[in-house]
Image (cartoon, rainbow, N blue to C red; front, side, top):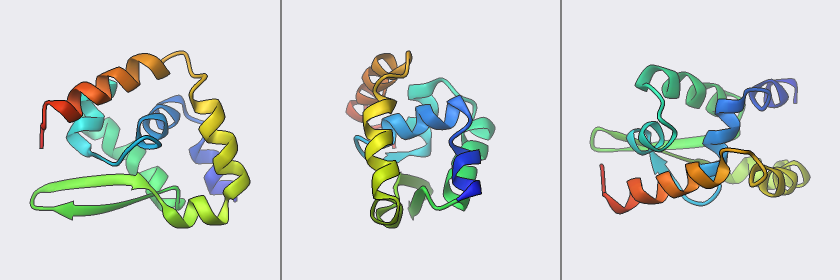
Length: 108
């Protein structure tokens, strides 16, 4: 539980969750939509994955991330809270629109 709250205490990680709560995304899409460097995005994604919030899979050379089904099930109340509150982030609307553009561009 402590690791989950540590992971959620960083704004960039909350921004990542806000775009991933709508759909799974490739690392390059996350980087582009949130204007993050590859190393910065990877560091945050690793933290979210290690505490069980995210899961990933590889397809060819790309890694795709999504909110873990286990996290959504085991932390149901926390996940419901996050789904409501992440939309209140000041960057949510811009990040969401950018993520939609990246998906439409079929970057991967």
